[in-house]
Length: 620
Image (cartoon, rainbow, N blue to C red; front, side):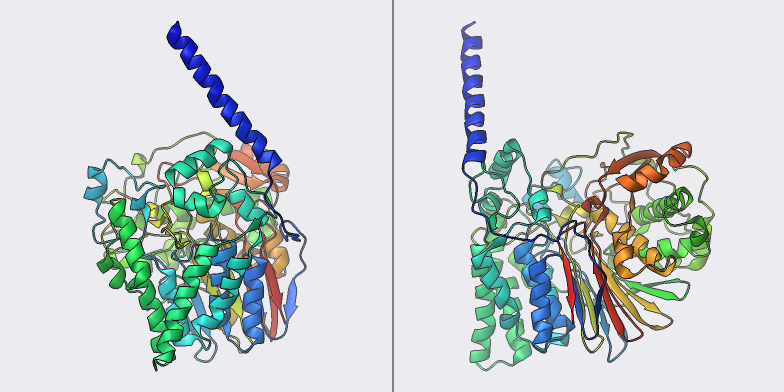
């Protein structure tokens, strides 16, 4: 009896404290700033004559436009925009994270892909994870951190194709980080944690909680709250000073930029990263950072009617877009009618068939025989097209049968018929960010930066190391299995499209496994249904989850198709007759991604940006 009384009193005290903190939530709001958030606002297509930018936050767009106005080129503008995204959308696009790049050089008429995913540390083996009791790479854990890629990406772009100094391009981001900005809708949504979640987050990741909640876990973040990143500003200033010091010592522009890269990968920042890993029994060493290399690669190429689609290599899911388009080529989509039940069914089937091939065959091609030529062959696409059925797939369909390429047994994937989506603190995978730039000379750059504060941040730096190691499989027979020095098959990617042999469009999007699905639908809206770029982006979307999540192979909702509400209302009855398990979300929900795109055709530039997030498009 005494024990019950004691536990009862303790319970009342705990609930009393929680109630007190809940009261504080409403009685002590954070200071706010005026802000006309573009989220969910109607947008007209942007028409420009000289240049255009579409980016994930208004501040990133403004930073890129300012560079173009000051004589910079598309690379300069894109770098300035990414650095601003690292500040104003840092929970979705951390500076040390991933940053896939697609670039079109108008002078050489060459399309190039830059490998924007880091590598696994040398110590990272499947055996090590198994020995530590993990059947998958855990998030909220130091073990989920990949070698940083984005700093290398930005410096190499500037060295080889830029004209401005790193110091000049990072200055607006430093200023914004110090002065702060109002929290926009998507940031508020990403960080919309309950009281208990904020307490747990503060316990699991105290450095990240300090950055994002200012150590006030009892106080939620709201839209328009005044948010600052002073420690990130300090880190950015250190990087800028490394360049300035090198120039003062007589270095040329490229050598001074190399000094910035060295400051990160070999200097004081590397020391802080390795110290963090030593203290928390992580895997990244000074050797991993100092030896990190990346570079340009030949893009993957697919075709759809008069269009040629270029995208990043198989260290990303970029291949899904051209594969799905080639599967759909020859199908009379226009006759079905846009977003009719027949059209939605056909797209869902094409997505599921392509994702089954992605799941089984796609991974870092430098570590295995990824059958790229077969996957992008139109004969293979024709074989897969023949697998389209009259009714819904009740689970992920079988992959294409490629002779000489052993397929992983998909039956070992855990499935669920639940229509409830797993709840992940910080909504990992729902976000990322993006920037697309076309300059006055016709150069185009699309960068898709990402990474989330779901692992320990580097103390006193403001740097988010991300959780991209979670996109590896710990199944040694999987094409995307973990190995030292290997790149995981990350979800972010970008794409460039030619029409009749000439540059036509650059586009990308956040959204995890939805990214390729969104790009597919936007492209078809333009190519098949002749929508302008903004109409194509605004149009309602479907999203299949009928395959294992790239972030968690057990997050697999077999047979589930999700639709934006108005589309659900239009086609759900017919789709249910085809045995679909459906789930609806509000219209323009960012679970359906947030595409940014720029078209240049017949000497005219048009740009669009998705109302599903808080991005903007501007041009001149």
